[in-house]
Length: 272
Ligand code: ATR
Image 1 (cartoon, rainbow, N blue to C red):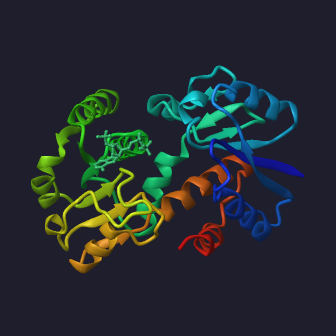
Image 2: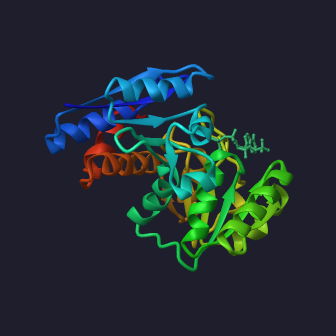
């Protein structure tokens, strides 16, 4: 039997267990998936302990993604190193991955949104925005990052431009009107809209040529997504990123294709 889990603080509300267990059931894999509450400062010990106990893999959630990327206990992939954050660990290989980044890309691909040659505006410059900016810039996308604290947008844009050898620009939120006007895809990578009826982007800035992707998934239909739909834009719910980061973790651990629809169903049953 294989054993997997997620470490975090808090971790009690993680939706990964039902999602992965549904995948095990659908594929007939003899495996289980649990939540492990790990305090800050105990991350290295937790990884070593999990290895010693014979666990096969772990997901990593807030606030430990950076700490795992910084340990020597596991070896990061190049992408995890660049992003500076890890959300998936293969304990058999002691390799650490970032599947949040590819999860965001695959969420869009699932909705037939190609990134190559497209112009994308990312609102936010925190951890999630960082993973998405690195991933999209790698896939031929013209990326603009806009953030409330504009210095963080400039810093992220400079870093991604340098590493990816691409033109990524940083902006203040005051500029999003004109940025969105010429964009193909808008990504909300802030926490605005989570458990509150707010949006980081005024409705007037949205248009029907846009694809709007919100990484917030509680609620599933955020105010931003509802308003995007009202103006005729295509929308992609944040739960898809959660599904695909999990699907890719499943694939890394088992080397089999993930049952994506099953994982999505399991997740949607838990989400409003
Ligand atoms: P995560 O790792 O989930 O991305 P984070 O690193 O705390 O979380 O980043 C949160 C992002 O949401 C930041 O870009 C933050 O903007 P600041 O850098 O200016 O703090 C953004 N954010 C949070 N609340 C916001 C709000 N009310 N309006 C606009 N942006 C907001």
